[in-house]
Amino acid sequence: MSQPNILFLFPDQWRTEWFGALGLPVRTPNLDRLAARGLRFDQCRTNSPLCAPSRSCLSSGLRFRACGVRDNTVNLDPRLPNCWQALRTAGYRVATCGKNDIHKGDKAWSDTGWVQQLGRLGFTEAREHAGKHDAGSKLQRGTPCLYGSLLRQAGRDVEYGTLLKQQVSEHTLPRRLYTDDVCGEQALTLLTDLPTGAPWCLWVNFPGPHEPFDPPAELARRYDGVAFPPPVDPAADDRDHQRIRRNYAAMMEGIDEWCGRILDAIERRGELDDTIVIFSSDHGEMLGDHGRFGKSVAYDAAVRVPLIVAGPQVRTGRSDALVELCDLAPTLTALGGVDPPASWHGRSLLPILHDAGAGAAADAAHRPHQIMELGAWEAITDGRLKLVRHADGRRQVFDLATDPSECRDLSAAAPAALAALEGALDADPCR
Image (cartoon, rainbow, N blue to C red):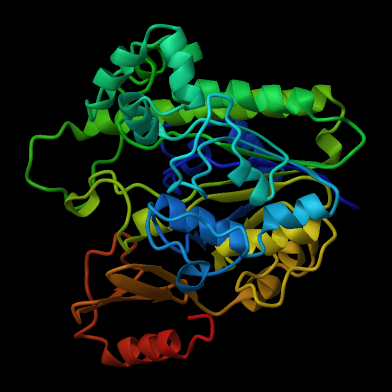
């Protein structure tokens, strides 16, 4: 179809297998329904498992070394072509809310959620309010920030700062002031302001389920007594892993509810049949596996991310294509009717999305390997075997089919596999 609307749902730190439809006791009915009417990608990985680099690769269509954002202190350069600029040039209204993190290094923020840097990056409107920790630091410094302004007006800013220091807690703020609820409300506000009859793209960046693991108490209570699989190879400490996982799931359920509300609002506008819906995340969450929490490491728990695409002319089912987040830039650009720049490393997913007859052949043709990097390591996988090469010279090889939790290093036992993967990594023209 010509220039569909695009709803891009993008929470922060959503581990790839955490959906009710995939067997875990987390309630995600709206996203499960979205996957059932669209295509779920089982082998999507981020280019770099850290907020700003990941989102910058996604936006610029470039892999980690080329996008220029090495950590969370660096902005995406607006002089680099990106998908938001391309959509705006194609006539789209391009809106964003929540925590987009592609100008994370900026000190310039505002109480309205709009700054000029967002315009330079391609957006036409925004209700940006930062992530959990960024909002807390801005409150502490007195820096303008949409979310901080809402908390100050309600007299709950000190309470938020106290809650933020607790790694695991139940939020005592009312739902209207919880960070993901604020993001959802801002998404509905932006959607209301977007005109009908013209194409739009709305990028909804939920700050959760990023740590701290602090769902509203109302959501946390729903998981009382629910048992989750324990971490793989956890550290010998006294962490309450079940409580952490219950709280993580509770945050996800809250985000799922907002995804449903936003989809309902689009349906009320009469636009659901003209809207491509994408759900993904910037990176995963270790959740205690290998004694770690957060991201920034090469384990699949951190680098694999969910990706669901649904909408007009999108085939249904599951795909094993080796997709990287930077593939979303040329995909979004192509949806807008614009040819992606030849310099981009990402590859459009439209051939996979639209050709119901291609199936496994289209998946296999997408790319033979994925490459992930961040500072002290780089990794490559063909979907089954995975090499992690560390800056200190260590090499690790894992068989993801027989050892999905990456507990058995095969680098010594399988030198031929190590050499083949290392050769493919060194020969990749995108590095």
